[in-house]
Length: 89
Image (cartoon, rainbow, N blue to C red):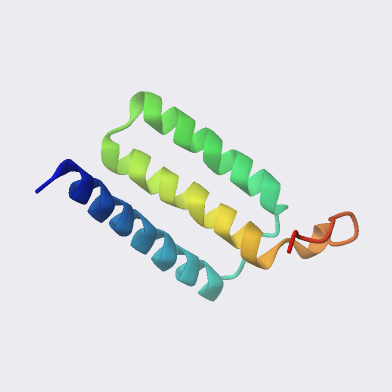
């Protein structure tokens, strides 16, 4: 298998994991913390995992960060609606 194909399959696997986590989070009762704070916390956990944890943990943390970013981009954060600018079209 070529390196390019292997990278593409890995990316597809990563995106599938994000989709699963995104859908699972929609079913769960949401965290009431501001989305930006949740993203920052998850990014910090990813940073620490990259320093000290095995690859599987880094993968899980990266999926968590990406999922939170997708939620922020798609759903926004109702608590911030008053101060948020309209998204670009």
